[in-house]
Image (cartoon, rainbow over all chains, first blue to last red; front, side, top):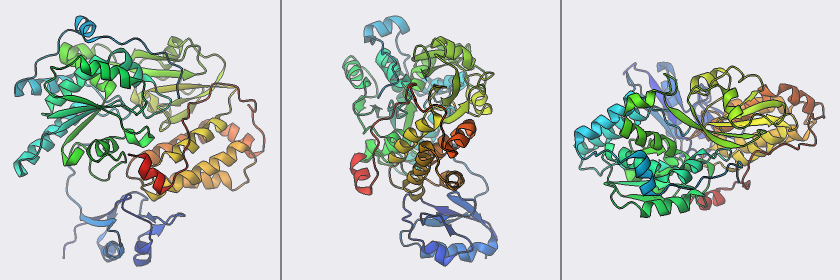
Length: 81
Length: 430
């Protein structure tokens, strides 16, 4: 199993605030006062360390609208914009 | 909705060519590459609000198209001139298109050719004062190598955001898209160039006169001139053209100076930042200097707020409007902005209760960076900077008083405020 770090990515347009990700991984994802997920760092992308990967995977799998993804971190970003 | 700036009569195509000369020929790939090199040498940065280097965007669309062609025989890129001017406090894009429509269209033509686009659009809000002049100007052009059509997306704030504009041109829905960026996957999945109309006008002049000519004015980090909408408590609300890096106080003078002692300024637009009077006294009008002073150059709006006007009452009007302009796609925007607007309203009304300002500050920290576009970020910054710039007035309001209860000064232009529901949002953005 790889020890590479991963990034948890939230698509805020797809997210409907069902809150299942919080139930699946309360140590990783909180909900704001409107019921929408707060990733660590309160952005749309959060680095997930090796130890948190099972929780992140559980959160991704729990989402009924597929708004969460787990990406393997690339060494360099090539996106210019 | 108006900032009170008069529009000039527009130049016909023959007057335009007599003044500026013919467009350079970009029929060979070498010439198209050289144009992008000149734009890079010019150091042109986008005037729509982001001040992103224009040559980098042109190259990104080119590279995205090149990689697409390797994968499949993909379709050609498309270029869009963004003349939406979604910022209600800004008049500069409409003023430019009204006076010099062909300069903007020349820039669109060159930019479209430089990225190998097969077609181009110029987009202005439905009901924009620029619609008629552009319709007339396009009838005077039948020789553009890339055909240009005028399109009229709905007059909604976030419809000017570049992914929303590409979404509307492709699918007829003017809502922001996440996470694809237009330069990679825009209109119908094609690489899409979106450039502000003022940026394109500068590009048209760089294409004729070269990058070194452009750099003769402006500052090293942001060369050239820029249009500024100067309004509010000034003698002559105007759109002025100044070299980037001109002293802010000189720009105010060009609008006749303040009509009264000022409390502060709104910089950049409604997604911009408030600064208190004095904060801009040493600043120059370029992205870095305005940012160091606590402001945002953004869409190049400088709105002077006089002492006879309550900043929190103005903030309330604008925040409510911004909340209603959410596309209703992302929770923190759809629910967060109305909650923020409600707190601001209580503060503006006076004696809001001890919990309101702390709760407001907490909510401001919860919406930025959590939307598919920057609408929540801009609105949160508008409110947060007002609380800082006008902290004395915030205290007064918390105690139930107001230093300008008559509120007689010029009002920030606020179009009809919408109450957001998912259904109206879906209809309104088509």
